[in-house]
Length: 177
Image (cartoon, rainbow, N blue to C red):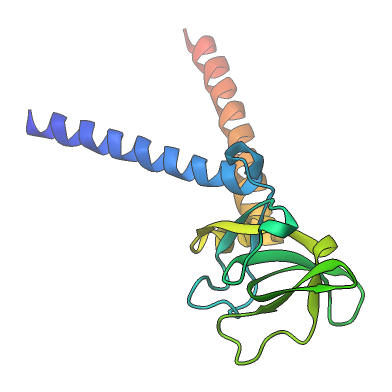
């Protein structure tokens, strides 16, 4: 009887764990499920201890006038080489007006000095709403060549091989009867 209870508890625990994993996957893959604008994998430690490289930040849209000092915002910023636009999440240290437009002065919590640029309201993506620790490591792995092979190709090959084996067994057992 105790073994039955342990097995039942184990199955329930596994079901809860799988639901938790599915919930995280849903939030990361489709942030609109929870009313968020987007989710991003954190690539640097500039916001430690609030969040670290490998975490995922879930961002909700916010009106530019509703951003206050202390908020952590995500914004579009040109990459250092100017080739691409990246997303940065830093804390707002000041909200100012320049030529009638709201701009934000930002700083990474782990950085000694504020960023050397201002963030224009047109670059605002939203406010960081939720941080999912370490989830970004799995997201980055899943998008890598090894991750695609491990999570998609190998299980697909295993499924096909299992089906072929089942068909083979049915045919050979049918001949033996």
